[in-house]
Amino acid sequence: MNTDEFAQQFGQLYRELYRLAARRVDDSRAVLSDETTALLQHLAQVGPSRLSELARHFGRALSTLSAKISALEAEGLLARQRDDDDARQVLIWLSPAGRQALLNALDVLDRPRIAVAADQLDAPQRQQLLDGLRALLAGLPSLDP
Image (cartoon, rainbow, N blue to C red; front, side, top):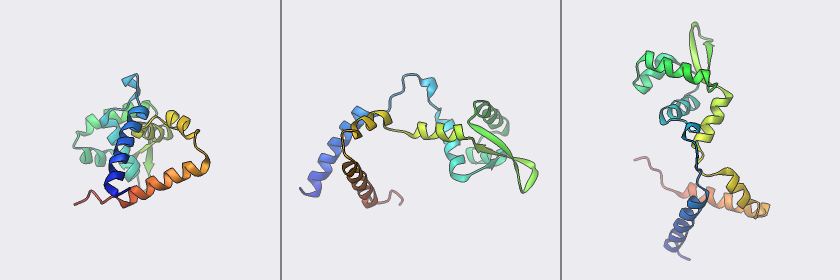
């Protein structure tokens, strides 16, 4: 099979996999908003941040972002901690629940459905599938210009 045929078959199989295993959420209240997901993702990437740094990064007023942070803290998704370098400052950080919520928000496929399908494969087949996908990803050209 040449690479064109592979790409065509892979695309067809991927579309079918997505159709059958895409994560579906029945209650939209269980989904993080795009704004919340972006905030949690930013904190996961840069680490604990001051409110002023977050407001500057997101182009939001301090008061607006402060209210959002307080609401997410009340939900248990964020935590505040004193800045070791400046005790007058408070850093905002992801709580364990915030980390889990972010992971769930970024899930594209329905893990339980994938697990059921993976149960039909033996351990070497599962490893081979993962190794193949990793190799395919490694071979993709970068999206950066």
